[in-house]
Image 1: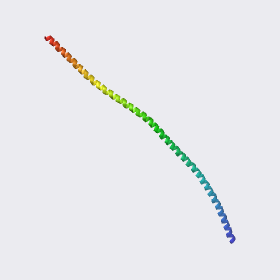
Image 2: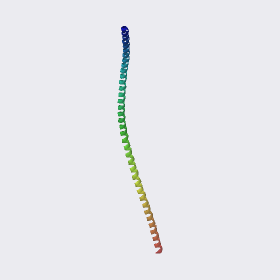
Image 3: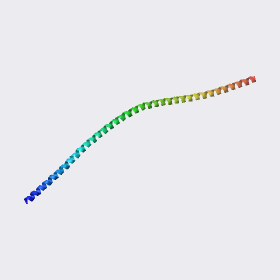
Image 4: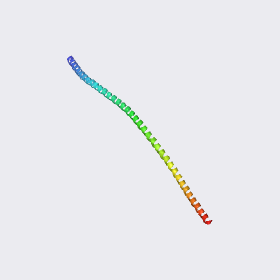
Length: 133
């Protein structure tokens, strides 16, 4: 009976050792996989950091370029607006001058017509006086 118990214990110990060896192999495999995953994670983090850096550089460049563009064309736009205002002011002044000249011309035409009428009237009166005398 003792022999059977000892044999059973020996078999149990051998099974435990083989289980322990299998568990050890699985553990080693998992540790290797974890190490590989850590390496991959570090590579991904480095890539992410590089992309973030590139993004910041691109944003800074875009802002700087946009500011230059806006400044350049804002100045040009202001110059164009100033020229346009100047032209509008000149047109308005010319329109006012033209209206004033038209008014003056009409007044002069009326005065001339009135003067011609009065001259004709005066001539007719003198002729009538000359006939009657």
